[in-house]
Image (tube, rainbow, N blue to C red; front, side, top):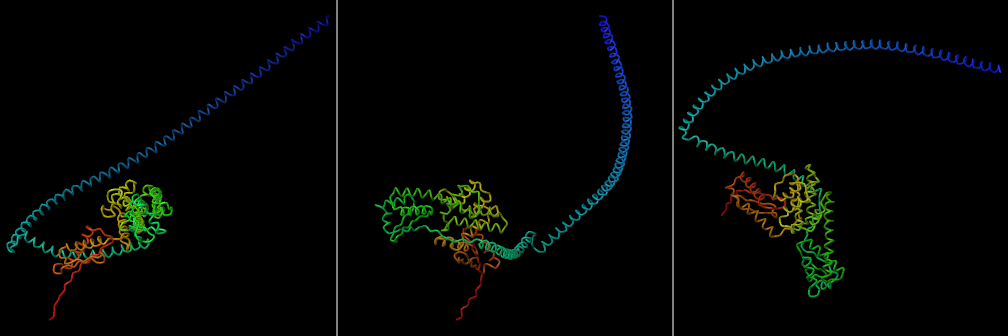
Length: 517
């Protein structure tokens, strides 16, 4: 029992001692940490003090440096201002000197002006005296000669006019001859070169078409019972059928090539089909008209493709194709337009103009002829309306309007198209001309020559390509003969329309005739 109590006491004492030791250890440990923390705080304070001192020193150094830089900049600015001030002082001094010089010059000019005014006044006085002396001398001369001033002036002017007119005529003749030689040479070279580069076959269209028949029995079938078939064909096609004694042939007659072509195709289709009666004629006629429209468009497309032209409205292409079925003096209008386009392009290339625009103007110059039988007005005005409607270039419109001289040409291309049109129309065999028109043209040529004073007789020769004017030698001298030739030329150009050129030759001769007996 006692042992147990002692053991318990010992345990309690041990626990108390252990707790004391543990407390002592913890106390010693806390005290060491506090000291270490205090050392660290002291060390940090020292570092902060050191950094403060370094920052203050650095700030002082920077302030000193900034002050030095500012002082330097101020010194430089002062130097610049001083230099500018010196320059301004020098300039001011220079301006003062210049102003002084100008004042001296102005004073000198005033003096000179005063002297000139005095001199001018003296000259004016002298001039008045001279005029008075001249007037006195003129009056004296009038008394001595018996002529007044106006009468003498009129006499002198008439003499001068008489002498100068001959000199002027001679000068005009020499200049005209020289210009003609040079212009003819250049023009011939240009035209010959263009015509050499382009050559096309000439084919004249007639007003009749012959349709071959397989046999003479077909004539009776075409005529039909009581002539009903032939009447139907003529009524719907607008073409006259001529059935005569010509074996195995029928003649279609019409001034409209398009109608004649439609009638030809319709008749040939009827012959191949074999069924010839009014209903079948109307059916084949309608079919032929539709096919012909496609064919017309194809003609227009072929023409533009041949010339290398693009951007045409489909409606304009169709109008171009219709030119294939129009003629002028027997010349196919489409072939004529293509030829004019080619020649215009070649001439434009030689002269450095726009070749494509010249070709376009050449192709469309006669476009009005395609529908002139459908619309009132000349083919020129119709063509201008068509070109404006399809927004063609102003140069093309002017070329259409001016190619017959109705309107003033405003561009080189317009003149080129007019020249190409004349070339194409005047080619040998290109056009047919009626006897009546031929005789009228010759008569008109001779009348123009006979109207001029001093002309004895006028003869149109070489189919109207040359006009020979015989003048009265006692009334017309050599220089007057040149004036008459020029006057005849101007009258022909103003009053006549003709393809190509007309040569005017004035003949002046004196014949001495005696008869021996």
